[in-house]
Image (tube, rainbow, N blue to C red; front, side, top):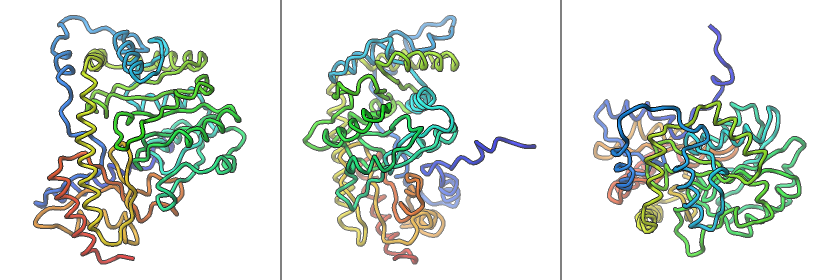
Length: 398
């Protein structure tokens, strides 16, 4: 039987590649601590559960394909608190941020067109471009060159080609934790304006920042608004990853028409989850202040642990809840496997994510890992202690 080569050729998600080995290790009696995936461990606000409990019994019809009115209004109000002005009919509800990203690429690109990514990038970006038949080029940022700073406009020009339609990036960045400054975003805006490119701005981590300067949205550049799609999700900012509610928002009328058609094709997103997530619009804004403080503390725990590890190189993440770390090993993939199969510290080990999948070229990321600090302080301290002990014992170091 023949199956789709398009799907079988998809790379395995780097954050999930070693879940099987982790389960095998647990089956052999090891306790596996997980620093591999950005899944918040915090309790969602009570408003979410209260809204679910209030849904009456009765018929459950298809929802409005583009999103329930209360969900779109809730997102409108959330954006308004941040100085962003979208009308409800300019906001489209999707199956998580990934649905918003997929729709955005389908709406902006035809098969064979090109999209520009900032490298390292969220690994699912590459998976979606592959599935949609879209090529991608990359502008590379590096930790050793000023902590993943966006390079010059000339670097972007070197990657431009006929058929390029859009730029897709996240800020704060998954996986680097970099929160781009206004002058860095200006570089991207000028490049996009010059070549009439759509900016697909993945801002799902906008509530997670740990530096004095404020988060800057692409929406703050009036000249790019006709070419802008803002992508958002409830998953991270309210710790409801399983709800799968995202949004794509734009003032561009042609893109709105395309989003409406794509939403109709998918028949909409779960009505009950939309109602529950819409209720999160009533959450006190101080909720995010408390969440930021929790992650700020965890970030410091992580950085303190890094300072005690010999031979590693790391940057200080400014947002999100990830850090890319360069290890003194020849191959991070082999190290991650070894930690699960051949190492334990008093019966415990750690599941990590090798970083090669966050780059296009195999020359990057081969000695790097991603660490997610979505666990409580004590577990994070313990896990990073085990990683340090593993690095000391690992036989194939540089």
